[in-house]
Length: 160
Image (tube, rainbow, N blue to C red; front, top):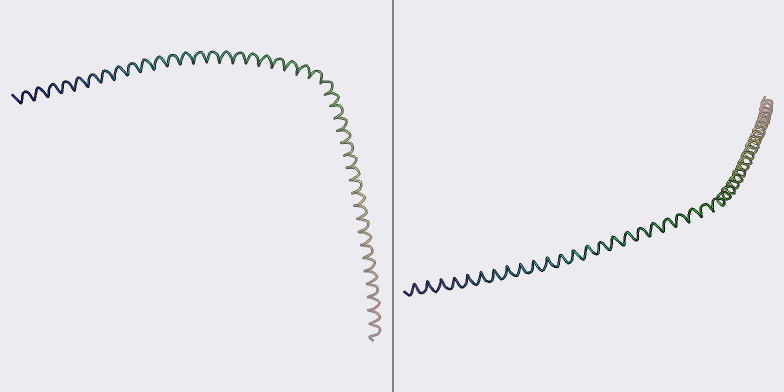
């Protein structure tokens, strides 16, 4: 009978422990359910705020693009107007630049002709100087040969 009482006590304790485990498990599941519902509510609110923000951002971007396009069109019109006003100035500047370029080209051609003429004169002068020095050397050699011939004949005469 003591054994059956111990078995009965064990059974009741196991039942109580099991009941307590199930109770805590159900409480844990309920807490998870509540947390999931709270998170989903927060996520929906966040999505609503994000959509509103994106809608406003898109509207701002459209307005800014329209304003930017308007400003660009105004700037383009102003540039075209200024360009038309500057066309005559550009033509005058072009003519002046062409005139200056032609003057520079003429000066360079003149300098080139002068340099070519100077080189030619120098070449001719150096050639003439070289020919003159060669003639002088030839004359000196002829004189030297004549002197040697005279000395040879004289020594030959004296040697007899």
